[in-house]
Every structure is written in structure tokens, then in C-alpha cells.
Length: 156
Image 1 (cartoon, rainbow, N blue to C red):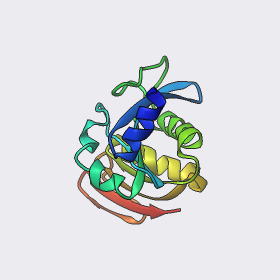
Image 2: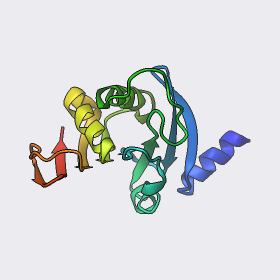
Image 3: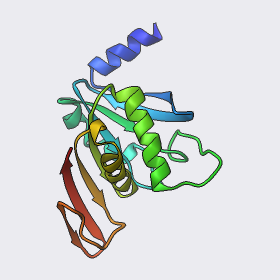
């Protein structure tokens, strides 16, 4: 019965959330819609809430997947260091486990950093992407920079 309701909510474009084991990390993700996978990577120190105003339009065309990183939102923290490289490894595991093929990536702030690392390490998992980040003051290949703001659009 619960599985039927989950499938019904997905068809209706409603938010559905669940945990998945992605390479040993208990990862919460929200999903909406159907179609080609679009991965939303949130910024540092927040969960998926800021994506919600954009999701209805995105879910009309894409299967929107929004994992919450270690120590963010519903995903518990784990022992050890927390680096963008480690978070990119988690994201790669999530893509391999849930996305079922290459995905479009959209990341902002720390999520933009993670998206760029994922695209550089595993281009086979990335259709294309947009990263908006404030943590660099150097130009990004294929992007622009102004002070502490950079935007990069890339295609694998």
C-alpha cells in the first residue's frame, strides 16, 4: 500500500523522500517527476528546502533527484573529515545507485563545488551541468567570475 502511494505521489509530481545506502552512507533524497534524471546539489549548511520553489517547473520535464549530503538535512553525519572530494565520492555513489544513468547536474555553493568535482572525475555520469558557487575568486573554465561569485556551465 505504501509503495502504491509513493508511485502515485511521483506521478502527481509531489515530493517523495526516502533513504538509500550509497556506498555505505545512509543518504536521504527527495524526488519529483519523471524523465531524464536531474540532480540538484544544495549549498553548505542547508538541506533541500531552498530548491522547492523551482521544483514544480523542473519536475514537468525531469526526474528531479535531490540528495542531502552528510550532516545536512535528513542525512546523518558520519565520523571523519568532511571534504568536497569525499562529498563528490558520495554523489558518484548516489548517481550509480539511484539515477540509473547519466544525469544533468545543478549545484550551488558547496553543491556547485561537488558538481564540478563529479564532472571532472566521472564525466560518464554527467550529461551536462550548471554550477553556481561563491567560494572561488578565480575564473572557472567555461565560466565567468566576479569577485567571489562564479558560474560554470559544462557538458560532458
